[in-house]
Length: 366
Image 1 (cartoon, rainbow, N blue to C red):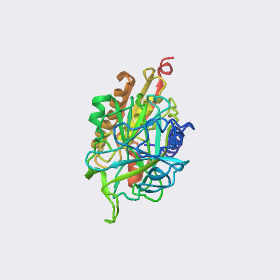
Image 2 (image 1 turned 45 degrees about the vertical axis):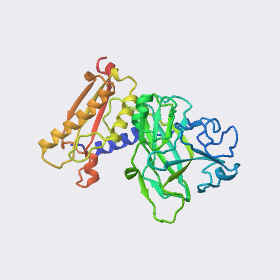
Image 3 (image 1 turned 180 degrees about the horizontal axis):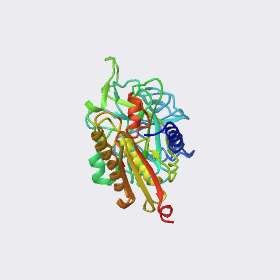
Image 4 (image 1 turned 90 degrees about the vertical axis):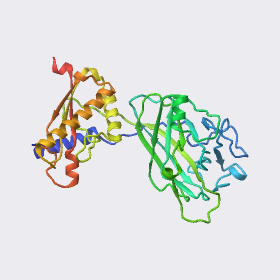
């Protein structure tokens, strides 16, 4: 069983190793603030060839608003309502819903193709137009290798993307406020590990039905029909610092979480393990020992078996990423080595864990 001193040391080491990543200062989204343009358009739908590095991936006509424009695409007052830019003079606008098939998108370009295994944070701000009768339940982003160009205005489903452009990464972003906010801007963000092909990102609705995608707002007197129209501004992409792997020390994989009685890896756990794997300087030259643990619910035999399943699940995922089978050792301890002796839910969650020790082969065989 862990002593109080060992528990304290592990907690300090875990805090050092798994500190919140700090983003570098360079924004990798080209013209993410939508300030660069060839000219200020005097009509709606003028995006391609007008707003630098910004495009529409289908025939749906995304809109560009600017404080120097007049009429329908002016700012802050425009054809869908009133909204000041989040920053600068310009912002974009799209129908995330406008009927069963018609959908608009904004496609952005990165300064460089993302690097496999590196962790990035993508974020932008949205504001629902005043005359929208619906709000979306979530905002999505689609990452692709190539610039997409579909010859119709229909919804871009993931199947269509796969058939025409191959590899893609689809993600739902976390909302840091209400997506029905019409007065101000709401930030949405995503932290992810790149696969190494991502060069473009597209914002919009990718094949979801209205029932699962929309939330109707109160107020039947709203004008504009059954739409969800969003303004978009201040798009950013930053690369995060990798994990600082320390060797020959027992550390807790604190981002690998398990539900009670489960050994399934969550999406967050898989993202963390990808980051962990790519943070190892050379996986083929290192011995990785994984140690599985549980809380004290259930019998000791059941918990031993469960801890074994958990550590094997982590090992198998790392093997799928490229860690050689012979370089991974697994150990199961069940409930015998708790980090915390409490019976409260938080203590039990902390005890459902996987620890690791990385040793260089040169250290094993001097």
